[in-house]
Length: 93
Image (cartoon, rainbow, N blue to C red; front, top):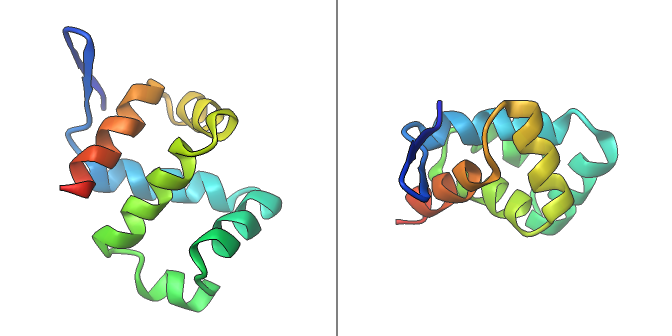
């Protein structure tokens, strides 16, 4: 759920949003391969680290680094792109 306050987006559940975003990334084979290539992770390493804040942050950074994916993921997940960026900032702290 995204809460809009003024001109800022807040992601109350950054980890949950990240896991939903990861599922979205992995739903497309080309995008999943690009994510794994850019992070240097193997599928086994990704599965082992699924709950780690570092992996969750990398998913959101992956989306924020490529605007077409960011916009498509936000639409698919039913959130504003700013909510994904806010979740990324929350996990980066």
